[in-house]
Amino acid sequence: MIREANSHSVADALSLLRQGELVAFPTETVYGLGADASNEAAVAKIFAAKGRPSDHPLIVHLAHQDALDEWASDIPKDALKLAEAFWPGPLTLILKRSSRVPDLVTGSQNTVGLRIPSHPVALALLDAFAGGVAAPSANRFGRISPTTAQHVEAELADHVKLILDGGACQVGLESTIVDLSTGQAKVLRPGGVSLQALSNVLGFEPEVLKKSKVKASGTLDSHYAPTKPTYLVKQIPSLDHIGVLSREAEPDGFSGLWLQADQSAEAYAQQLYSRLRILDASQVDSIYIEDIPTTKDWLAVQDRLERASFASNENESPEGKPSKETNK
Ligand code: TXA
Ligand code: MG
Image (tube, rainbow, N blue to C red; front, top):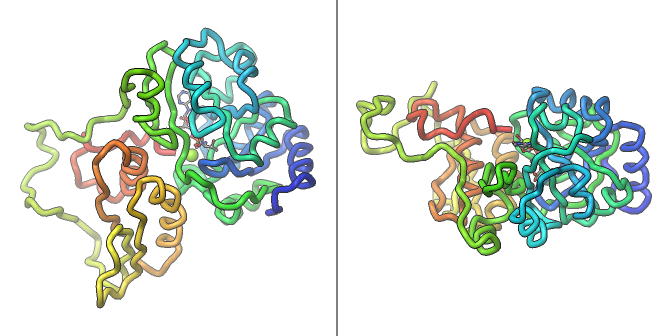
């Protein structure tokens, strides 16, 4: 059930968490599906609700930086610098785990993902809970992440007793994940904190771990290819049945569904998941997304668009693909 976030609904969310139940709540990035991170039975409900494989680790959400030592060990200086600069905010740190972190949360790895979100509703809930809340994005496994309470309800209504409604998420894309478990900062997922912002604090640009988009010459996966983008499709779509996401205005005479996206990376990101949902729920048969800039400020959006279109672009070279492993 969706309830407007206020002191009453947050108090009810708190008792549900304490009873080992799931609660969906807004963060500044996307809505999360939360459970008491110290309660394995509660965490197991997250995997069941999402249909997510249980070896995929979850992010533990905290209210205060002083809780860091309870959940992580051997914390490097750069981690503290990033925490200081970006928490509360859209940054997740991967650190060596402490012994209290249940295996189910970490996918049995020796690391744990930690984040302090900045959304006031998330912070109020976490502060009152005074423990860690494990929370993935509140969508079914592999689907579009939710940026409104209604998005959560559409997919998970049967699995979550309470969805706190805190309005549309301000960032609209997931947190930036920085792995510091080896001491050297590496970006595992671009997101709400830009590469530039990380670099400013670290004093160097961290490596972004992602398969290169550059196709190695000499590989034969792309062959016989025209220079124009070439699509192998089941059926040629008629213009009425095409959905488009473009930063250009809808041209005269277009008869499909054209959604005009924003010009800035931040605004584009904030609306992206809502627009993908609109296109997906519409009558169109296929969705065309127009290229976005290749500059670094668009990195997080580029990442999400590649993953959103991955399954439909199998005729491209596999080297150009992000790994499906991280596509959740
Ligand atoms: O913005 C966000 O991060 C949102 C909100 C709700 O906080 N959460 C989110 O969670 O996106 P989820 O579960 O949808 O994505 C978490 C990502 C996954 O790709 C997971 O593999 C990675 O974080 N992750 C979590 N713990 C990890 C660990 N110990 N090592 C490596 N990756 C980890
Ligand atoms: Mg997710």
